Length: 388
Image (cartoon, rainbow, N blue to C red; front, side, top):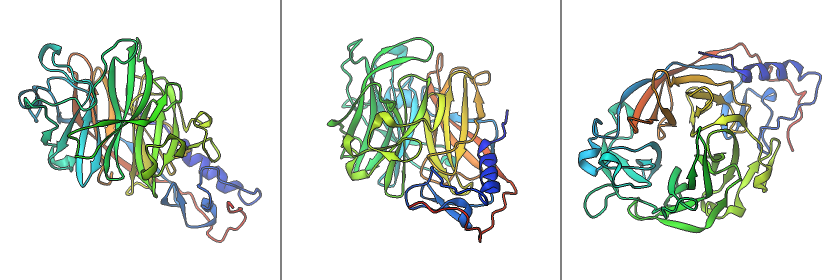
């Protein structure tokens, strides 16, 4: 089911009124020029044409199963991965890696909190064959960051995303102290772990630790314009999305992060405003140059669906959501992660997890495209005031 995107309406209204009002665009970085004063405006580090395209996405379909005994990668036989979830991806040294959450052998045995695979070919059109996984001595997929396994303190350590920064692999994790009902869980803290040997060994940072309650217990990373942007959501699946940023070399220093408060970047994490309202589950974000949009996919727990929003700037405004996959078609679906490394053109590839009885990760695809609206902009209009 498709909805009309509010972003187009907002831009049309602002253009119609700019002749009689002084306009300051709060979603632009300092030094950026408002969209109505030039044919191309830089929003969130991207050049966006003034004709505003509406973006529509079709319903997703399965390409194939990536993990488990029935998968094309035969992970049960090769690495004792019979069941796992998440499958979020990141590029490092020109290779694509896929990181998973709680992982099990047959009948729920051999529990590992997090494991890692390297993709042989980063182009999802070629099937996402696993070249290997980080292995233990016995050849099974090894746990990257060991959990204490103490209920109420640290039951498990779940990776929420990873990024390549300062020559290292950097994992963001949430230390889960307890699982609740109805899409809720409780986090003791979140933090970063790093690997300097392409994922073979990992060390938890002693400085990059955030207490629960910041709204960044789970994250999606995107790199743009010299920054790593951090889209954060709280523990569980019922909060909104907030936005932070940091330079790659300062990623392990919590004091170096800035946060979007709805009008400007500030240093106080508790001042971060929602860029997208609740309710948001596992989230991923990617830039599509072909469609001139940031794309955000996430699990919406109230609708039991995977949805898509788009925006010209990470700070928003973000469009209304469109359904990409529905639990009536894929029972137990969650955790949509857009495939990074290449441009999102007419086909949007992403991974999707499914809960019981499957508990594995699938490669999915959906068709996506634009329908340009007649948003006419006068390039000679100088009625707006540039931001100082």
